[in-house]
Image 1 (spheres, rainbow, N blue to C red):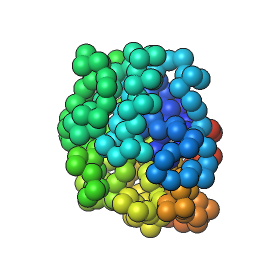
Image 2: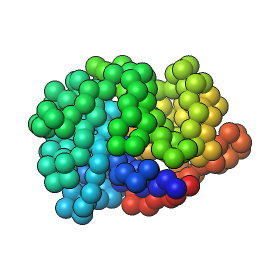
Image 3: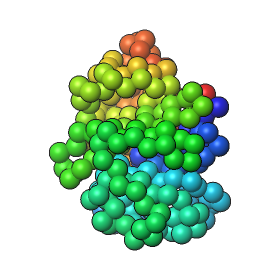
Image 4: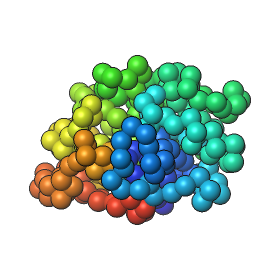
Length: 225
């Protein structure tokens, strides 16, 4: 059994193989660079356990040193991130790992494949495929669709749909035509006005495509599979 919970923007709690992972923890309810339309789904004080923290790129809404430092110090989680992101993080060197595209790790009973991401504004963006117990999740990070997505075969794909330096709805629909997956979870939309997207439109068009079942999570909601 795997469990995915949406915490807002590109942040998720993923439970697989008896481990708990957090992606792009950025839970500031009042960020300086833009009013948040929907508050985050969690605060560090509510978290009791974390085994890994996965960071997709160095942008402040994906790599927040304040949140990552507090979460790592509280839980002793391992931090996996590309070098430009690690350079921004005050994390114990023993608790950090550098993510390079196409790296593969077996750590804590999890298989982690670092994937390519296409984001021209980032120095080195990545995504992650996490696998355990015969189940797998693809966390795309902030990315446009790209041809190598044809090689991704997972149970659940988490994709941005908000546009503005990432896939919009149509880009995400193109992505699920390439990715082999049972479920698709949209992310990184409606956090700010600049990335507003019609989630219902995405849901209907994803259903019509017949390629993957859309799972529309509100912030704070999760599903297991």
